[in-house]
Image (cartoon, rainbow, N blue to C red; front, side, top):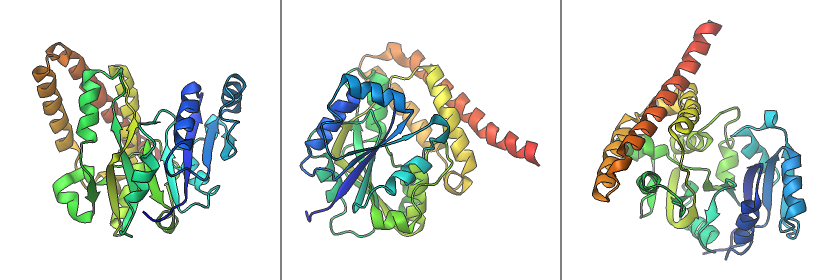
Length: 301
């Protein structure tokens, strides 16, 4: 692989020592980042962490930019961070994405070798040790084994999954990023999929790099799924140019059928009621988010 420069961007909010552990793993990568840019919301929380744990301050390539909660924007904050970097590639991560090994950046950057059409490559997410069987299945459903390159031609076959991409851990080619205008600003969710759609519509491709691994999972309650999917539904309703073109219903049905089958086959049948409750929370939150945008438009008219 030819040498490539990469900066890592991590939005943070109330970080704990887990962030320090992640930074240590990133600094130990076979392809070490030029800079790790922390876009931190509310200064006092990160200051408190750095008083109790000096590992962040021990690295000279850490760059910190503070902002208030009212100024944080899923797309806008990431776009702002790109302005602090001059690397050829931008690796966006979340503060709870833990590299599995020291080859995360290496594998992501290798995705771009010999293919100038690739706009972004995203990593495979593995469940953490405390992940519930439901979440274990969810991770395997969305992040299977085997690399995938997705283009405009795949929309018939893959549907909404064509645009699936996750900023939990995704590496962007800078020249294409700038050409396409970067992340969209003022969005509550899905900034990564909106960018992926823009890239694919412009003739570029999205790459799923299954050898690039991070641990990332959540044991959300039905209410947490409800709250999260309000933002999901709202973002989809606000961007019909992306989510109105292809349906996500088919993927949802496959997930439900697959997870129920998985739970039964592996002796977790007793978790089916909990899974159904989670699905109900997701659906109700999603519908509320969609209605929020529709009702707002009615009030403005």
